[in-house]
Length: 161
Image (cartoon, rainbow, N blue to C red; front, side, top):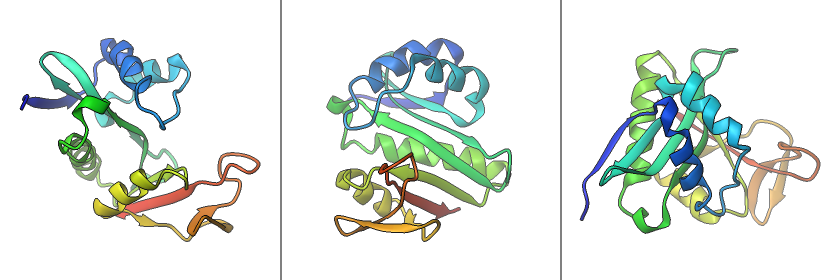
């Protein structure tokens, strides 16, 4: 088993993060520039997991500018060959540790209601489905209607930290 280390992102990591994200289906791939923005402007709350000198996972998030007691995870991904090794959970631990140190009380994220693996994973980490917004049942899962646009319903999850 390889050793994995987790550290804050650096600006130079954005190309590696793009490479990892391209192999993280069903997580949607972002515009390239978003990864650069995260590594440049949100490095205090973004982390990469490395194994044998290469990036094998990341978590990208920030603290709300509207409510500094709230943090948001935009994206988390681990390469397929490194999944089921607790890396994503360790990335979340580092993120939560960082935002908690800045007095955050809750972490939010959204998930496509069809992504049952992600829903189960996040529930196992202690995230709960939020009752916010106009709810819509999507295959037995409560989602927020039109959260990401017309007919793009998303499950809003949160964890009190």
